[in-house]
Image (cartoon, rainbow, N blue to C red; front, side, top):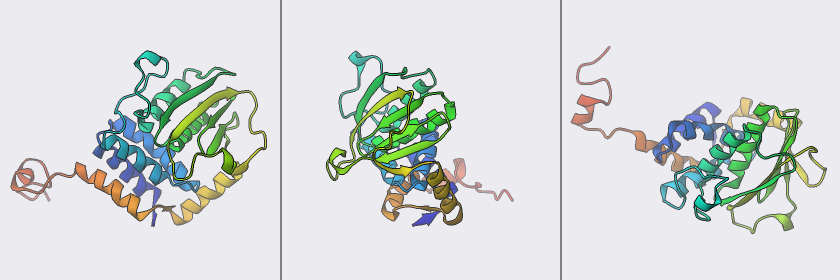
Length: 239
């Protein structure tokens, strides 16, 4: 199913708000999900999984404290949406330090968090590389604003059918070592964006329908009361 990136962005924002995300957190979802979609990943599936987990109460709607282990959210209950926002905020404080490796909690949509971190690091224009090891890919954001995504060899990926997993994050002086299949680099990313400009985004109709169901919660029920006190133009035509 093809649709414009603008249309899909609006759907993401409304779907996030529909499951109760604060406006700023819902807005933070848009760029990484759209980027994943453009670059050939099922970004719509990643965000739907994260929103559904929140909506069903399988993950908690709060920001994890990545430094205070004593007050950590129980394993498997950390939301990818809130983790992405919390971790990206910490990147602005030069976290992690050069040579430091951080293990993030297991989450339902690690690819969404990985993309968020890579894109945030690119905007910061740091002089070091940020390496983000997700279950199926490795994302590397470098000083030249290039993001490289490398697919892991099959034996190093998560078991088939599993989307969940943890992320290893490290700040390093060197970048891509040449191992693995390059899925995204500067040239490929530019090509993906050109295809999107000409043809729009490709997304699963079933997932779009689920996201729309979340967004529809923002609609005001049709009634005489809503017509009179909030919805539409009111009883008297405003033209």
